[in-house]
Image (cartoon, rainbow, N blue to C red):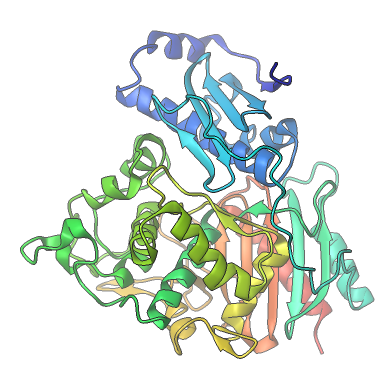
Length: 471
């Protein structure tokens, strides 16, 4: 007998229900494919929240899915259930357009497409997880090294009706944990989804391969589909993909109708589908942010380390997570064993802080060089194309470009931070902020739905912390 499934549902409204019902059986139409984006995204995020972060489905749904501005027209018609025995989350839209996401020990959470939702793969029952090394920071939260810092951290955490929904704030200075705060039900050992902050992790994996002599970021023809010099995509390099200047015709506006999100949630071989896209611009000539660039980088990583899911997970653990001390970090993989390196890394707030410390220390850990000399400087140098200056480096955002991100309407950087600051940034307010001039790393993880990844609140929290720690 299956254990009871937990369920969250929003009351249906007649308009969209009728529209969805009229589209039943038309999942291959643009409307049907867009509906599957909504259920695919929701099922994947909820799977990460329930089976990796260990949060209740009802809380995850209320914090992550219900308030989504982009799904305001459909979220009331979404229903979610979780099945602890199968380790699955099932999401439907108006009773149809179903997507399931399943957790497995090797692959993490993975959205199942049509024909995939059979019995879960066999995994050893009651297999004990690998023992984690003791946390050098200790098991209990560190309240703050000074009264001023404690007060700043207290102000960062949610108050009643706080729209910012900050879940965790961690502060390192000179590599030492000087303060942290967590929302109720979350603590130092709770892995939390980084969304697009995950791109900085993919950057690190590429950097490690460069340091090991297994990859060059300036090499053309990096994918088999682009091997022919006669193919205009042959000119695309890993550097172009890291900087979002590859020029592929893979628009991303997160509408559910755009090419990038269609690939993310409606394709089994996501990198293969992205690699088949034609060029919209010559490589290096136009900046356009798209998750598909980092899916392609994840395929480069997979192929460089052995080509299998097991080899990818083993490489990430041995080459990055283990040496850095990221005790509970992991990346979800897709059905081809390719990492979901655009947005699907989960790690504790302390893990994210240790990752930021790697870049603060120029790629060195305990005297061991993980990243090539100059890699951090290159990764945090703003990308420029003809007629276009950006505040984006290579997987990291910088604090060197004034003005607003085109189409986003929010600043490129953090106005209250020093000019040398750089940061990883993710949807719903995930930030890993590195301030070299202050030898400081600040992590803020949240479930905010404020515009622009809630960068304004991150800037306020950072300014408060900087003032509290001023010498």
